[in-house]
Length: 66
Image 1 (cartoon, helix red, strand yellow):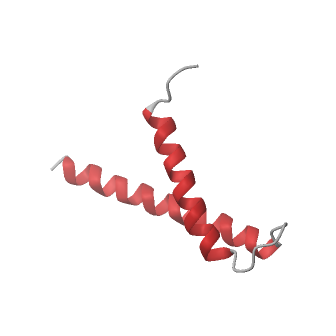
Image 2: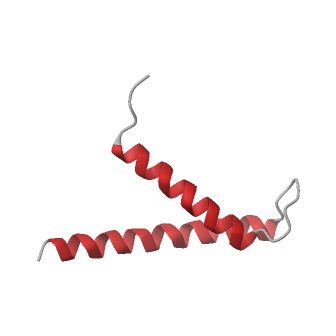
């Protein structure tokens, strides 16, 4: 089995963090199945999380090039 790449590790970290944050934010009453509203909330939350992370990384990249 090959060693995980840096990209694999970063992706796994993003998934773990966004899942934790979004689940806590969107699922107030855990049950065996998610409601449509909960699914939509989680999807939107993860998308916002990814957009914010990308914007932050872009800003840091620009700062480092100055």
